[in-house]
Image (cartoon, rainbow, N blue to C red; front, side, top):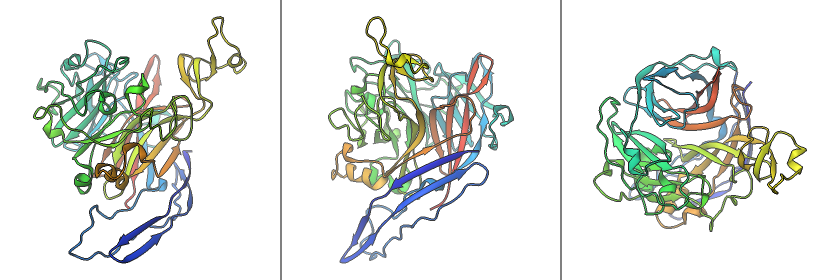
Length: 438
């Protein structure tokens, strides 16, 4: 049984048009989703005011998503191996291809393959899920050009299919000196064609850690308001001072890649150490902390919702060696090092057990206000945070690798890392949500 519980309190909003004033008050909602039969709680809908023909609105009238608009449809498995590479421990990058109704998915080593999308099935057993088939075998999407970012330590950060091209980016995993400048590239959708642009700088110098990650397409109705046809962002990398303290997002035009250098990126949303609006890194709350992971973003067409998905620690923040023994967490090591109670992770680092999967839902109008200069990127807060659970396949506290959105069929894909466990293999499982029309 898949269950997800949400408790969000929306704020009141006043809509003023000409001399008419309308007041909309949204109350408290509690939503429950069932894997067998999703339940829906009625919520008020936004009714757009009638505007004079000579004064069209600056942004399209649309409603914000509520949690019950996200309906779990099931999951499927990825294929095993091609070209000597597999998906084991992969799934950190994902991009829906509307040209062929397929998915590009990345491996642990930064290679990418294209696969079919079988009809998802609801099950708690991986072996009962359908298996996708290869459409294109594994290839290096950057054709070795990630080395233009740095000679070593570079990770493939994100993928995007836009206007018949495949875009990607990379980031230095541990960039202690914040030296990265280049980040993005473009190539043919045909992985066999070694046709790749040189790596390009996107955004300001010194801010690669804010943009070299997940990407998404902006719906046409919102492109003028947000300043571009696509967005790119990043969050929560090692060396936190070089990246966003919470979801980050910048508008850009992929078609300008290679034509303008550096390629401009318009800030829409990000947080810094000086402006840690969602919370400090050395902490844990329902919005951000030192263990927060943001897997990706989707801007849902015909709504006002920008949706991030990821994982967040809800326990007491602790930096040290993880241990599954609660008694050891009270004892320091021989050199004074701290032990942190975390039965899911024994490595040294930040811990905040227990962990949960969650969505961060932002209002597009708030991001448009940042682009217009009316607000700062760190002033924006999500209008709701929605914890959710996936069927218990694989680890008890799953991690998300990436998400991607199919606007034509209103499907949201997400990879659950390490979910398909077979022998020493830990392949990702791809889960599918449908998005109800508002």
